[in-house]
Image 1 (cartoon, rainbow, N blue to C red):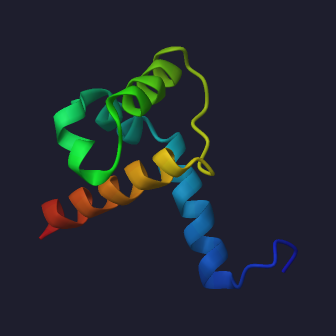
Image 2: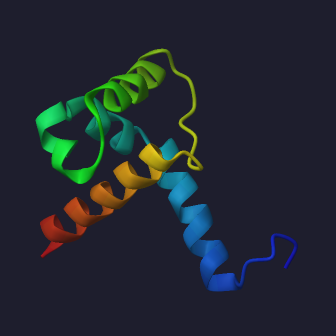
Length: 83
């Protein structure tokens, strides 16, 4: 494997990239309020910055801590809604 990741890890990595690029994920972020994510370690400023990137049609960086945290919260919310 070129990336140094085992197959399951690589699949999860590429899946995360697909989610971050998805319109559904972007709309979900735009719908968030600071009080929704403040207790999860995301500041109002960080959330506003990510929203501004989306509005300016700039790509979100999966390597950023705040984007990874938003992705975790998004996955958790989708897992709960499926149950």
